[in-house]
Image 1 (tube, rainbow, N blue to C red):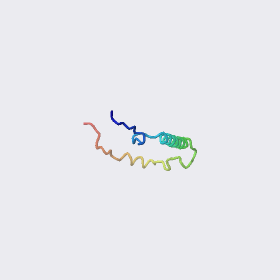
Image 2 (image 1 turned 90 degrees about the horizontal axis):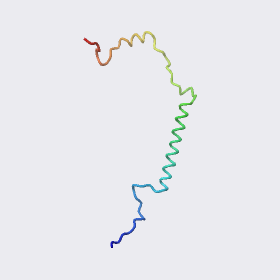
Image 3 (image 1 turned 90 degrees about the vertical axis):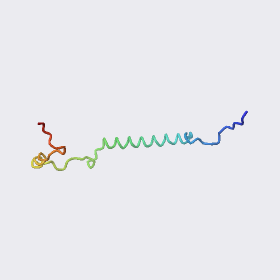
Image 4 (image 1 turned 45 degrees about the horizontal axis):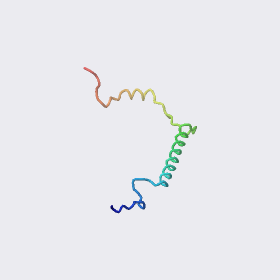
Length: 79
């Protein structure tokens, strides 16, 4: 028979230890709850500073000028 020594003293690089696994679960849970809280707070927040609205509406003159702009793709008329 060959001498087979159990490899109990070395740490395998591709697996977490039990302590590191629990630590990873805790970190992921905290990050997940933080993301959920900030997302919920952003959606339901009544902060007036966070509301984005148009300050100036386009005038009739601006709308007429926009109609004069030709499309970038060129002429789109069929012959």
